[in-house]
Length: 272
Image 1 (cartoon, rainbow, N blue to C red):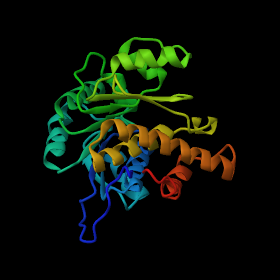
Image 2 (cartoon, rainbow, N blue to C red):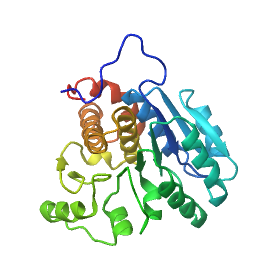
Image 3 (cartoon, helix red, strand yellow):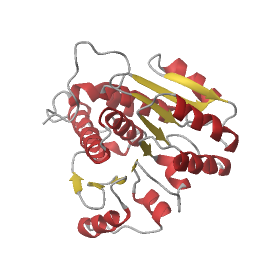
Image 4 (tube, one colour):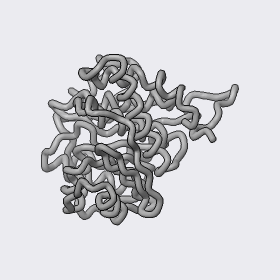
């Protein structure tokens, strides 16, 4: 069965998803751009980046495929909360991603927690945003931590034994709070159903692969509204792209290489 819906002849712009990426900061500009481009490569129609103004202008110069919404300052802060929430509510978005390149300024952490708790849209929570959410109320979301971020979020160390690790991760997940734990074997769980993903390789330690993964989650979620299967499909595809590039280039491929090959690999996976 195909995961993504069939496209109709009389389709219009927006029928297959509008997404918003909230991220970026003074020194971390590439992350939201990579995520936004990855979402486009899944098949969504419009990808918008909300970022501090300098980062947003740089993203505009980097790619004409991305629209940006610009916010004053070098980092998101509490003063941006209302405007960002208004953007989420009024922008006709199908899904939102928060986290890539946000930075760890205290005001940014307060901003991220407030946005996550108040935005009702289906959302992906990634990277720096995860570090702001200890004790936060999280709903309708996919969380994409690695083991270190899981420790910060839930104050729990994860063992290497896959069965023990899976049991711990399951205990923190719910139907409306999917956890995609990144690792040698990715664990995707809603607290009841669990899938392990074994695609991927050590070449994917290069910076930015997590941003690509988050963007893939975002794109699939916007098109399907299916939290669990969007997380699994994204993890599987992300790893398959890495495996494809390892065969083609060996170690040393980059996340830009991954972006360029999303469609090449995706079209070979019949269930996506």
